[in-house]
Amino acid sequence: MAIQVLLNFLLAFLWAFMNNSFTVSTLVMGYLMGLIAVSILRNFLPGTFYLIRVWRILKLFFVFVYELLLANIEVVKIVLQPKMNVHPGFYAYPCDLQKDWEVVLLSSLITLTPGTVVVAISDDFKTLYIHGVNLVDADKEIEAIKHSFERLIKEVGRP
Image 1 (cartoon, rainbow, N blue to C red):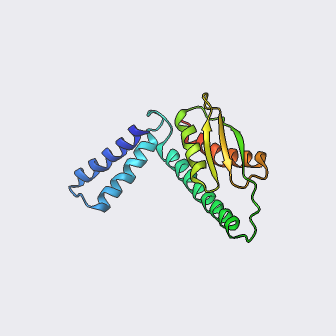
Image 2: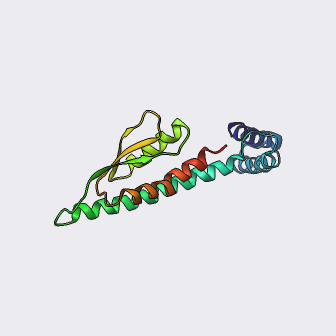
Image 3: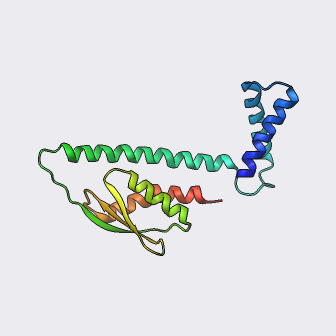
């Protein structure tokens, strides 16, 4: 992916140099021309086309922001209730991710979401121990994380 990005920027600057104009519009046009060239040559370059991975990263970001907003609303509902009716608890989350950075990213996203904290990770990185502030159904929480964060992290991690 890095080679493709570097090649695209190199082609953009080459375009601007050939036009003898280093304005923003010329550089953008060069970037778009380089994007077309890189997409044509993507079979000869390592990895998938880099804009696919950028799209996957953006999708993960927006899903995280959505989950963050939902979790904030849920925590505000808990805090503003006149009588606290919470059921805090721990649960073990079976993680299917392969790489260390993927497990770290998943645990960071879970911890950054209000109401949940990853308190420990097993030595083999296959189990995350999570504390939830209002744990009604652990299986439901596990499925929600698997279908949102873990699935998207696997997509981002694919070459």
